[in-house]
Amino acid sequence: MIPSSLPPFREEAPRYFVPRIALLFCAPLVVNGFAMPYFPVWLSTLSLSDFEIGIILAVPMFVRVITAPLVGLLADRIGERAEVLIWSAVLSLLTALALFVSHSFWFVLIIYAIQGGVYAPYVPIVEAIALTGVRRWGYDYATMRVWGSVAFIGATMLGGVMIGLYGGSMVLPAMAGGFLLMIALTFIAPRVGKPRRPSTLTTLTEAPPKALRKLDLQLLLIGVTLVNGSHAMLFAFSAIYWQHIGFTGTEIGLLWSAGVAAEVAMFFCAKMIIRRFSLWTMIFSGCVLAVVRWIIFPMDLGFGGYFALQCFHAFTYAIMHTGMQNILVQRVPEEQESSAQGLYFFYTGVFSAIFTFTSGYFYTWFGVHGFYSMSVVAFIGCCSAFAAWHLQPQRAGRGGKTSESA
Image 1 (tube, rainbow, N blue to C red):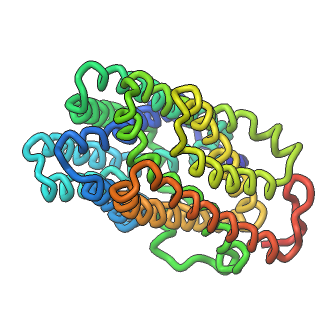
Image 2: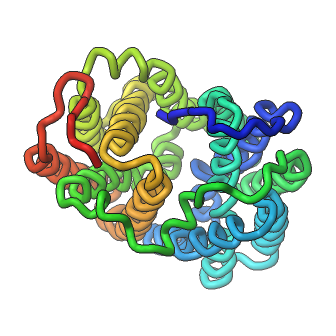
C-alpha cells in the first residue's frame, strides 16, 4: 500500500504521466515473462547439470544486491534518473546478444551475471519515478503498476506457445526483443528532475535507522523474506519439471500466468481484506500456506492440481507482502520509508540468491522431492514471523493498528 500525499509545491506534472509509466513497467516485465519461466528451460538444452543451472541462476542475484544500490546512488545524484534507464536497457541488450556467442558454462555464467548487474536497477528506478508522481501529483500507484503484471502474463502465455513450437531456442531472441522494447520506451520516460527523497536502492549504502534495528521488526523482515526466498526452486526448476512430466508449453505458460493473475487479483482485493483481517493474520496466512504449498508440490497433481496450487501465490506472496508493507508504514516514519524498502529488497535478494543456489543441489539429489527443503525454509520464516509477533512492543489489534510511534 503506497500512501499518497500532496506536498506544498505545485509544479505541473509531465503530460500523460500515468500511461508513460505504465508502459515503462510493461517493457521489463515482458523480459521477466520470458526469462523467469523459460530461461532455465533454455539452460537445460545446453546439457548443463541441475547444479550448474542453479549456479547460473543464483550468481546474478548476488550481483544485483551489490550493483543495484550503487547504480541507485548514481541515479539519485545525477540531474535526471531517467537517463540511467537508457544505459541499463542498452547494456542489458548487449549481454543478451552476447549469449548467442558461446554456450559454455563459464561464458554463460559470466555474461548472465553481468546482465543481472546492469538490468537490476531498471525496475526500481521506474518505481522511484512512479512514486515521485504519487507524492507530487497524487497519482495512483496501482493503476500504473498493474499493467506490468498484465504484460508479464501476456509474455508468459506467448512464451509458452513459442516454446511449444520452437523449444528452448526461442528464449534468447524473445529476451533480446524485450530489451529492445525497453530501449525504445526509455525515450518516453517522464523527466521529473532530481529526487527530493533518496530512492530505495540508495539507502542500502547507509546503515539502517534505529526504527529498523528493533529486534521484532528485524525478525519480521527476515521471516517474510525467508518465505519469499522459499519460492526459489519454483522459479528455477518448475518449468523444467513440468516439461519433464509432459506438460505442453502452453500449459506451462498457463500455470505461470495463474500465479501472477492470482497475485494481481489479491492486490485488487487488499483494501477489503485489510478492513476484515489483521495484518498479522495476512502475514501468517502466507507463511503457513507456503509451507503447505511446497509439501504438496511433489505430489502427482496433474494440470488442474498444479493450476490450483499456483493460485496459492495470492497468499504466499501477495497478501503477505501487503501485510508486511502496511506494518512498515505503521512502524517506520515516512522519512525512513526508503530505508525500510531498501532493507526489504536486500533481505529478499540475499535469501533468493542463497536458496536458488542450494536448490540446484537439492533438485540434483532429490528431483521434485527437493521442494520439501523449501517447505523447511518457509517454516523457519514462519517461526521468525511468530517470534516477531510475540516480541512486538504492543500486540496489534484488528486491522493491525498499534499505538506505538516509530
